[in-house]
Image (cartoon, rainbow, N blue to C red; front, top):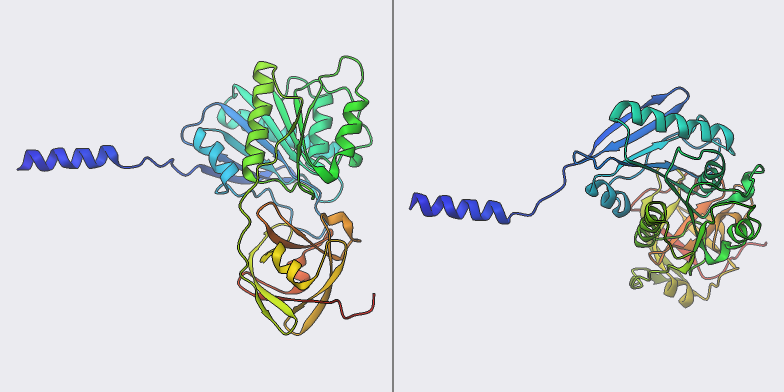
Amino acid sequence: MLRIAALLAMTILFRAPAYAAEPDCYRGKLQQSQILIAAPANYNKKMLILAHGLRAESMPVTAEFPPGEPFYKTLLDEGWLIASTSYRKNGPIIDEAIQDVLQLRDFVIKKYGRPDKIYLMGTSMGGAIGARISETCKGKFDGILCIGPALYLCKSLSRRPAIPMLFLSNRSEVEGPRAYIDRLQDNAARPAFWIVGRDGHCNVNDDERLEAFRATVAYAETGRVALERDITIGKDAPQSLAVFKDGGACAQVVQIDPVYGNVHTRYVQTDFDKLGIAKGGTFTLRFKNREHRVFLGSSYSDVQKGELVAFFMHDGNLQIACNLASAAALLGCREGDMLCVLKMDRRKK
């Protein structure tokens, strides 16, 4: 009986699912910038450095990224080391940010050993930083993924990249990457240009980001990539959970972005269709007896600095943001609060 019990125990142990150990997270300060490094136990000698987008001066100076989100978790489970820098300050920053990225690269190499491959992923302003790095830092990185690159923020682009690079843009923001590619200089490494078929700024889901990143790696390591592609990966539309009453609808705040203060809600497109609110119009958002005018658009730049804008994200839910400020701070809301959208903007424009 003991032998049978022992065999059964071994069988159960063998069949138990294997879970990747949590990565070791190192937080610190590198000269004037904050850094965060997630190093998995099964480090595969491949490193990804993150370059974040434009942040208002009033926002926190932080290097945080969510290791538990599907994109990062997938890479960490595979053994990738992921590192991020806050840059030395917020606001429009290109040349100094590049120095901070390179400084982080050198620090990781010194602390964890030289990896076999080093990649960079930049979003928005970070995409412009990535493009400039591809032109000026040959040999420092193997490949660069630029998501929603705000190339207009970098005035010194030579259009002569020397590192394999992939631009990933929403369909409403194709002009910048297209113009960059059309004006490439001689002997430049041609970037791939992939498009996500939805409006917005960096409005891509984890599956799209992961496929684009794997293509960037393949481009760097094999020289082969689809130079142009629609990479849209659709998801099932979420069901409405809004409560309709008094000519409006109320829905819950499910998440507050810890850095940008964007408010993620349970509103879906059909809620706004039912209310008769279309893209390009305004609506009234009520919370705690205060009313706020919100523009329904597709990106942060649809409104002036300090104004509220709402748009539907890749998951089908509505996000409320404030251009270069925190929507959560402006509204005074927290996760779990109920917001109410009124059918008409009753205030004078």
